[in-house]
Image (cartoon, rainbow, N blue to C red; front, side, top):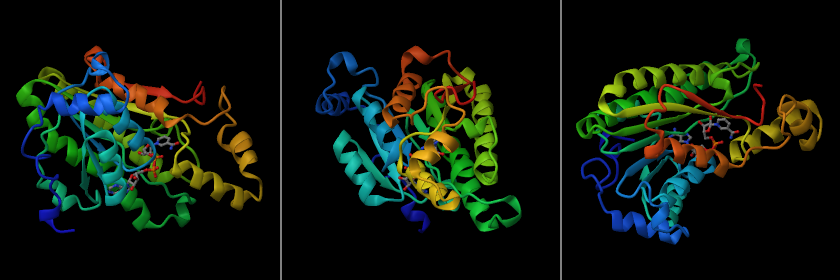
Length: 282
Ligand SMILES: NC(=O)c1ccc[n+]([C@@H]2O[C@H](COP(=O)([O-])OP(=O)(O)OC[C@H]3O[C@@H](n4cnc5c(N)ncnc54)[C@H](O)[C@@H]3O)[C@@H](O)[C@H]2O)c1
């Protein structure tokens, strides 16, 4: 990707959308009414918005009246979610950090959600995979926050929501890059909260346990193959072994927490990590 591609689509980087009508339209399309339009007039950017958690978060923010920019390297997926929520899509590869360095973002809500996983003992871990994970899940969030803060500071309002994980707080074997990136994201989020506080900008992490998304469904299948057991056994005996509630989290349960953090009610919630893990860390 060249640098010219690494700008949000027309209007995303330059013009702040104040179209409450457009946003309310999206809310109506999703069955929301005026009472649901707590984020009307707000512009949100959701990375990794084409699928899994990001799509659910895009839907939840739009249902509250926000105009959502669905950012993903999967252009078709992002366009489909954007069309569904009355927002816009932005094809972006978060590995292209040079392009992200040149970005200015005029968004009121930034959700750093895109993520990938690779599982291997440290001694065999592919250094290129380690670098990719740190880039997408730590460096890109830093660059997007950096691009968004001047606009947020200018209006004395902003919400940064970083989708971390229970692996931002706890380690698991064979996930060195993922655990390191998520722990780093926790630190970045807290520093953003410290610096942003005087400017009306909050920054928080959301820490899900295992959520029913393609990323996890892939892990279940992989582990079943590796251990030679069924997918049900992987869930019950491996992934959810520490859970108090033995089921996967649904994406819209996490999206509801994100929508609350984006709302006016969460103005004093900052620098924190919101765990939703069915009791995994209890
Ligand atoms: N699913 C879970 O159980 C779970 C648990 C805790 C935390 N999380 C976190 O939630 C976030 C979303 O995970 P998910 O399960 O929805 O994953 P997913 O694989 O379903 O979706 C991730 C999205 O990110 C996009 N993406 C990946 N690399 C990209 C890149 N270089 N540039 C732009 N977009 C890119 C993908 O195209 C995809 O749409 C991740 O940060 C993940 O670590 C997930």
